[in-house]
Image (cartoon, rainbow, N blue to C red; front, top):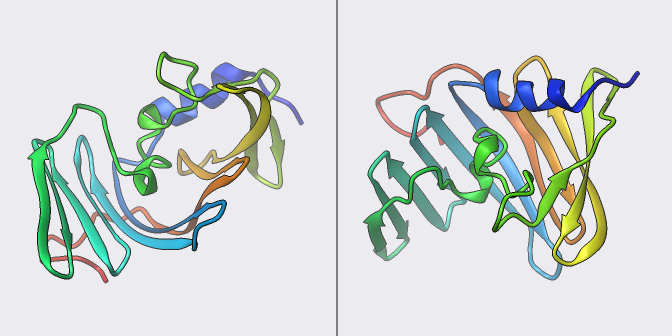
Length: 168
């Protein structure tokens, strides 16, 4: 079953979750895959932790820590999130065809097994294709499947993060 691109965009920009916790797997060609535990409360409080390093944003400041302590702390650029959070902050993903993005969405999304599949094509270099798998009920990108790079949500819980601390 096909649907229109506006429907997919509406899900990503209007229906995305306001808070949650998740496990996200990032696979990049030539690198060891990483598993990230992420937490977020919108508009801009989030964290991403892979057991070796932790990225934390409090809306104004980004702090990156590793086992040795704080590695970096700086003001956050408005709208930027770690790659592991892009499925939940779709406007930050490089898929919209904007200046600086590597991908653009294609017409003709289709519904398969309850998920919305949207094709994407590369802008630089041109000629490559990939796809997004969107969870239409929860409003996030369940997987970004791009040549040489995949971001997959393996677990998601829409309850707010525990204010007492990280879930992991």
